[in-house]
Image (tube, rainbow, N blue to C red):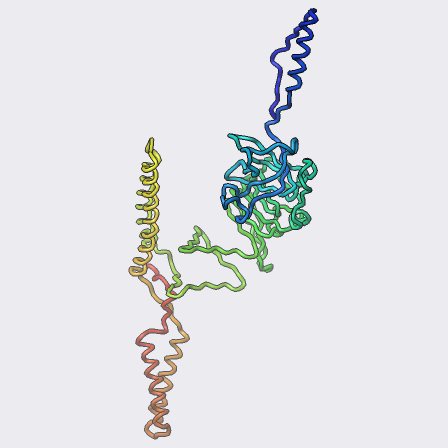
Length: 413
C-alpha cells in the first residue's frame, strides 16, 4: 500500500497571541482536509457478466465485467461517471469472482478495473466474505461451487513451485520432478485431498526433463513401467488424438502398442502400409516442405526487420506470410499423391481365399471329368459346377484374393 512520509518537521512557535490564533485556525482547516490515501481498494461483487444475453448492447467489451459496492465507501461510484460495470484489469489472464467475493480495484485513465480476488479463506473454490459493504446483499455461491468438499483444499506443493489452481480441483504445477529435473504437470485431480498421483488422479499430462514416473499398465499381469529422462506422460481413462489431416508417431528405438483389443483400420480408399522405412519417400516429403519453409523464414525475417511500416505494408506482409503458409499445406497434399504413384510395393496375400478357389477348381474339374460321360448329373448341375470353376479361374486372373488395402513395402536387397 502506498504511504506518505513527512519531509520537513518545522516548529512555528510564537509568543504573539494573534499569530497563534491564526496558526491554530490554519491547522484546523488543514486537518479537516486530511485523508488517508489508498491506491488499491476492496470491491464487493454482486454480479458477474458471463452470458452473452446479459451483455450491454451485446458488447463483448463487458464480458467478465462485475458489478458491486465499494467496501470502504459504499456510496462511491465507479469510473467513468455513470458506468456500473468494472472491467478485468488484465486482458489475457482473467480470474472471474463469485458473487459475495471481494476483489481489489484500481482506477486508471478514468476507468475502474478489478484484479485479484481477496484470499479470505485460502480456499481455491470459495472465498465469500459478506457484510463488508452496508448496501451489498449477502453473497451466496451456487451449491456445486460452495459445498462440494472435493474442491475446497489447496493443492500440496514444494517450495519454489508455481501453482495455478482452479475452483474445481484442477491445477497446473510448474516445478521439479524428484528435485533433479524441471516439470510441468497439468492435472484434473477429480478427488478430495488432491496430490499429484498418476494412479489416483482423473487425467494427467506430465512434461518433464528428468526424474522418474511410474505408469501402471491397465493389464495387471504386465505390471508397471518406470519412465525416466525427457518424457511426456498422458494418463486417463480415455485418450483421443484426433488429426484432421495427418498423424505421425515416431520412435527412434521402439514404437510399442499394447492393448486388450488392438485395432488398426483405415477409411474407405485408404491403405495400411507395413515394412521397412523408405528413406527416399521420407526425403521426398521433407525436400519440398524444407524449400517452402526456408522461403517462409526469409519472408518473415524481411517482414520483422522492416522499419517504419505503415498499416498497408503491415497488412500486405501478413498476407504474404499467410499465402506461403497455405502454399506449404497444398504442397503436402500433392506430395502424398505422387508418393502413391512411385512407391514400389507388394500386396499381402489372402491364403484362405486362394486355397478356397484352388479347391473349387480341382474338385469340380474332377467331378465333371468323372461324371459327365455317364451323365449322372443334370445339365443344370453341370452348368453350375462349370460356372463355379469359371468364377474361380476369374479370381486367379484378377488376383482378387490379394489384399490391395494392406501393403507391404518390398525389402531392399
